Length: 557
Image 1 (cartoon, rainbow, N blue to C red):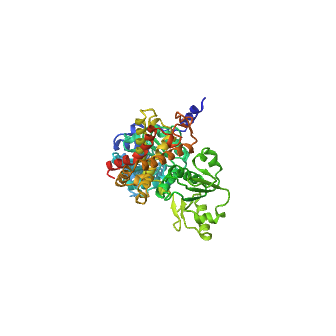
Image 2 (image 1 turned 90 degrees about the vertical axis):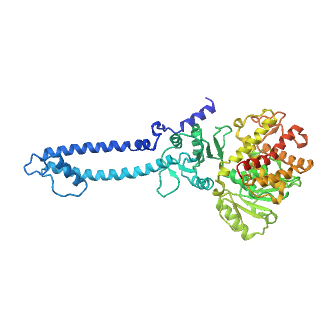
Image 3 (image 1 turned 180 degrees about the vertical axis):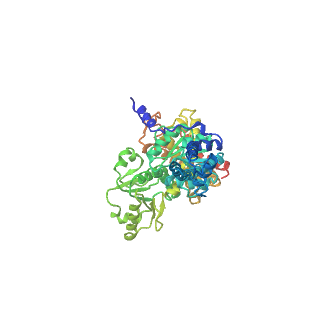
């Protein structure tokens, strides 16, 4: 058995096994009936036992000369005042067997009271979401697979952008705290079945456990609804309706757009080099190609062995462990970060990017207490607001722009379709691309904000590309159109270098014919070696500025 088949079988074994109740759809009244039918059966059982006891009580009591209960009417009245604990005393059993039945009535009364209290509580708790869901069927639904800390933060950010959005936590009970969200015990698939339409319905797999998110997303892909999945692992090929994202990747993307490199010879220190630091450096190498003859120096303090082993072509991108003029460099330090006080003093920015907030704060306290420095300090995943600028807080990352990234996908798809047009359809359709090539298109789209910065300089806002106003994009596009051919050639050369960096960072090699399966690409050559047609391909990335401006203008932004 091949590995792919066995993997799919393992996924299928983990799929949800609930069968969606086809009869539960329809009107709110039908749903109410299916919900309470279990209680109806229990109630009918109570009534049958009650009537049997009434007839038995009459038969036993009326044979005694001193009896006060002679017929069904008197027995019913006696049972009623007994069950309600009123106890008038006008009718009462006189025989031992009748008194035994009376005891049963007392116990039955307690049971009935508990039954009705429980029924009403569950009825109210269940009918409330049914009514709310029925009322809000036409509104956008965001169905979360769990009520995790990530889900609640993202739900709050969604509501700030789309006030009409309906937030639904599936597989959860209503906590009764008056939340504006709807909690139901149905699965996400059952909710979609009950809604009857996929229009503007979204599934959010944002549990704390990323592997569970991955399995949930694969399982729910059959529904056809768009799915957002929080997971560091992105399969090379996966269903088109699943969008994977990671917090560390979103953090790195946002950081270099909010705090772009301001000069071509910055010295940047990265202290603490775990998962967040690795992605931060990757995105820096892929995005920070901004100046002709730039020489940005990255100094890395932390365990970088795994990072270097995985990136075989790193030395083709930057100078390794040797500071170079006219070329970026990475210095991997074996010593502790506080061993070189001169380096700390001259650094333009110090990024505390350990995965542990506690360790980052400890470094910040030591730095502030013992060392002189003049550069900017940034601290990852912390709310410390002293001399350091915090970044990577979950609330800032879990936003519709970064998680749903609708505009990002639109522009990435636009770039790919323009490439296909120029190449006469010689490259695969978007849905046939593997996740790595899609990521390259996403990175190119993300770079729009930095392209605006390259053109407008200090006039450009330090914002993610999705937040830049269309007027600013138009201004940048017009400024580039007014440039001389030589100036445009410089920008195209930088764009080509940035694209080559992406491929080299993922261990591509040059070949006359591009083959992503073997990681070979025909553009991995100096810009001067490109033919005119290939240079036009590079030009496409710059036209995205105007495309994004038109996209935003159409949406009124």
